[in-house]
Length: 382
Image (tube, rainbow, N blue to C red; front, top):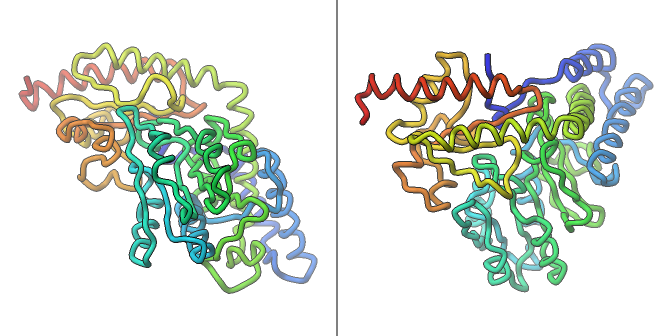
């Protein structure tokens, strides 16, 4: 099997799974319990919090555990909007955000908030001057993803942070789900106030994530009830998942240092080979893009047809975001980038991990060429 759908989810590290099983089996006490057995679980969570904070270059009291990227994004956006609504009700985002950001903002619009959606260029990158035009005194939040989950385009987070220095009322939220472990992001240096990560994107387990909330920034909690996570996110903690996430993040950061060059080499090879195919149109930019995502269209075929054809060869890629790939609607991200609807309907995504090899990439290229020929014969595409 060749698995090239790592932006949807990654295969958990064996070590992460082993950590989850060990902790869940041997330290299953409730971390909020007063007895010693519960305190052992609490200490494990504290240690994981410190490890994750250290890897992100932040303080341990700025890390709050969640169930993943969707909850983290909702928690950051809705929580900040509700907390600071008396300062203003204007929010800025881009036109190509993940559904967990888009839908959260649509809900806020029904509550009287005003949202400005920044356009992107043909590379999927926002125009900084557009941000400068849109920002105003009643802007309380700017939410921009670090790396686009469909095309891999990298947004200029540092420049955004610099602009917001002049607007102390406006907080910056960054969806770092696709970038973590692939493209470094200096949270402190870039003036980031809220930052979302999700464990299963870096070989941890599904159902676990974290939200960075900069010290001094306050948000209104979405989940109320107990005192967990400093009253910011009530509910009994997933101790095993949290410990496994810390281990997975450490291992991924080590992989990035050791094998980042190899990952980029594989992507460069794929971009070159795909770019030489007459039927292929590549949407991922050569520069200012993540080293693990390639988005491209195959002229004349619907995306789902090509995905299933490769699946028959035991090769797994995807169409758009995993959150919307089962729907037949065209990619809104590509449309915003100026891609024609007919071409956008043919778009597929390859997403790599440090586990992938150059040999797999070569097999994939051969399979793509053969699949195009086979489908043309079957479908009688000219």
